[in-house]
Image (cartoon, rainbow, N blue to C red; front, side, top):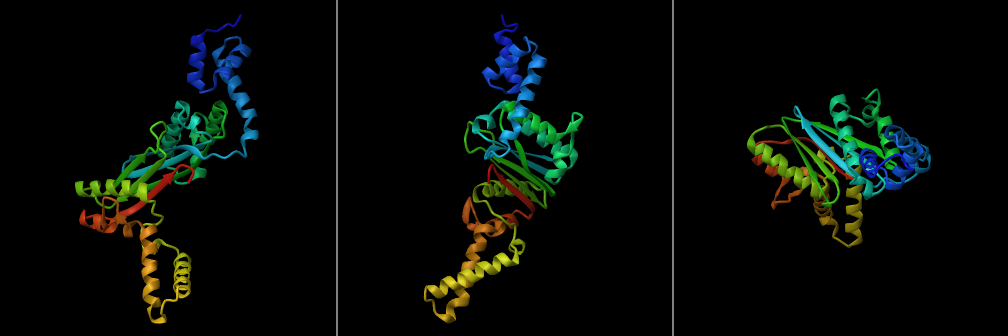
Length: 278
């Protein structure tokens, strides 16, 4: 007769996030010893890690926080939305975010090498993935600083944790600047700009876009004397798509994001946008 109860099964499931049958088998093997059963679940999960190595991790969550004028954001991925909404996975996301803050890491390698309970954070993530039964990876980290930083998280589904996150840093901390920073963060979540200003766009990208615009205009039979104006106009349209301050503001498309910020007496010093899997 099994030396454990339904309450033991429930407690171990909540503790590990493992499936019902995996928990029961582990308790059977451990003769009801919860600590030993946890170890069995972990070991079996690690043995399957090699098989999971090539699997895609397109689900997950984004987490962000702001401390002392610095915004930190992380993305952690898993294989299925079932695990993405698991409390153990969400808890792991918080652990990774806390480690990012306390370690001061600004890149992924530094974050994964950060100490956590006598080991590295990377090792802890691997172990937790083993228990959850899926490949789990920390994909990226961002850190931005400013006089004020707004962190905005957006859920694309009510059943899942945040899938989109934005950090928006500005150079003033007035109420107007804070409001503008938040509004622009929300805008950025929806409009996904790639660069802050035109100056940030790589020269080769601009030249390639100019060449395409010129070749397209010529193929359309546009008059030679009008080509320069047409090409520059199309290049401006290109900038409006990818450059934050040039984009029409979501709440009032008659204004650019840059104008909204200027009217609030501030400017963006840096931003980051993550969308799970993108």
